[in-house]
Amino acid sequence: MHIEKKQNLKVLKALEAKKKIYESAKALFEKNGFENVSVDSIVEMAGIAKGSFYVHYDSKQALIAELISYYVSKLDTDYKSHIEAFSVDCRVSEVIISLAGKIADIISNSIGYDIIRVIYEVYLTRSVDSGALLEYNRELYKLFNTLIEQGIKQGEFNADIPAEMLSRHYVLALRGLTYEWCIRYPQMDLIDCTLKHFEILINGIKIHKS
Image 1 (cartoon, rainbow, N blue to C red):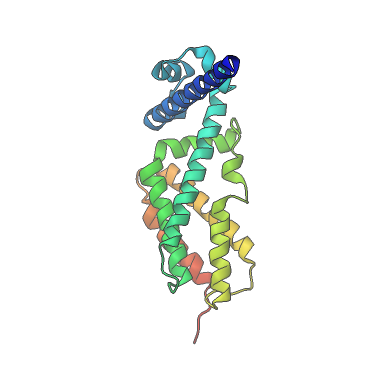
Image 2: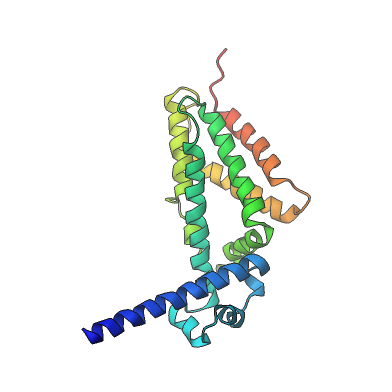
């Protein structure tokens, strides 16, 4: 029993150390960007030995990958809550445009340019596993797919293009807009441009009744 207690205590200490590493890294990354934070600065803020870091993470890149997965999961949950706040009789086109605006708002005002810029760098260099951002089974794709299917069933959208294909193109549009924002930052207003762009996209699949 004594041995089991010691083992449990060891596990708890390891979990606490990992939590300190994670939270310290998150705070430093949000303040300084991924590339300007070292493992040394992370363990210094966490108040743990450097060797402890490598018990839990192979590298700083592995920690960044976990943080990106966290961002993706949290954001997708926020987007889902945003949609669920609409009344059932609201037009689907309005919900989709509002969702796009919400995404642009979170990207520009909550996540911020510095972190988004580094995430795009991760895309291009493939220095970190970015599967959480790129997978087509990600919750964001499912949200768009569900909304478009609903719009088709309700006779608001044209059924010529499959909902799954449209949902992928809408997410691609968001990525393109965000990339353009990174290039033109800080002159470009991501929220305004996203809303205008999605109004055009939605208008293209609407059934216009005479």
